[in-house]
Length: 85
Length: 448
View 1 (cartoon, helix red, strand yellow):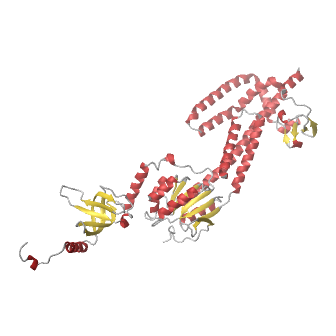
View 2: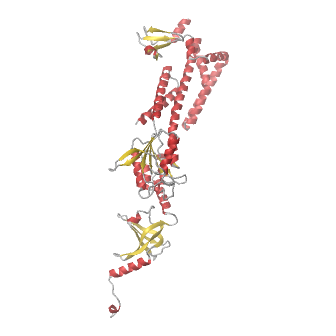
View 3: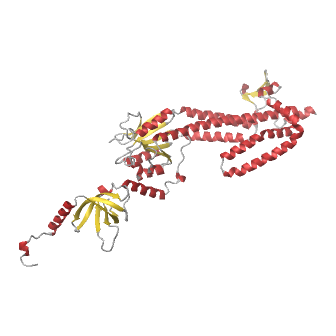
């Protein structure tokens, strides 16, 4: 569930910006917040870069258990939805 | 019975006569269409359906026609049969021997006036709507950042190709997991529902697209079936329905959290989310940088102010800064208000009121100091961290120059620090730390 930490990181970044926006904090705090914000941004961008495109399909084996396999879309069979007739 | 009758005429058993009547009826009515109103509708546990048909205008002596529909035919009736419904039935007329009843053996039934599918559609729509399944309040939002999309559709169909084509074109970095399902014909609704349940239960799935390419109402029918509607409604993950072309609305569209007019449009929606997410991060990072720059600028003014004018000037300079910030404040107040809901309208009022007060205050103070203000702001603008250092300020580093010391609390006696000027630096050892002493007191001492 990296998505969770991801969303947490984003929420934290938002809070930081809100705090900076609000002001009224010491320079030390400002700098610390900013540093933290930079770290979070780096983490978030890194996570985005990590993602890749992957197309898989679920297939049933003889026992009826599902497994995933890479999917290559075949040539269209028909102009309709290609339903197996 | 008159004498001799038996000799002259044939005598039948009940079975025989029943058999003859049955044969006669079946020959006479091998297939007949009968229009009437359903009453006494009953569905047996076996799935067989019994009802009677009667004409619209009924009196005491109006005839009724008993009708039966075997389970094998009854299960194919898409709409819900009920008393009062006007229908047209097709079937043969035959005899139910144990009762001596003749009845219509129905193999096909259609509502009168509209197609069976249309009625089924309307009935299910009304039912699910009454249950609240279409309520906007129960619609799930698309995930902030969809990363794995589940797709329930035919692996050989147009829908999956269209979705993948869109991902390709937009360079979307997403994982797609396809649950292959029949999307039309017998058993399609069940397979689609199974796919929704399966993908919904997989933790990595962020959003599900369920759909198929366009087609006739019969082709799209599975998406109008209750099984699919229920599976969408109970999905723990947001579901985008993507059935056919723009004009086709299905029950699935009403229940889904989001309706896309086509599978391609569904893919676009998901990718937009992903792109919006990147933009959001970028804009937050930019904003943080802006704010920090702004903050530093403000503080730099404060430092310069302290250096040039000593603390007694500080208060007035702060007021000047406030003046500088007025436009900004006002702009922000507007932004806040625009972005937020009515609840903040009051805040805007207050913010503007404050701003006004400040304007008055500053203007009053400003009048006698216009000249000083001009000079100062030019001086402040010229300041940068390097410029400050050039004036003779120094930075204190610890950890061999790796960390800037921003607070005296960071230092301990005995620690080695580096003190760097604009040009050149020296190492020093901290002999003692006084956390209380104020910079102001040093200035005051010097000047006194």
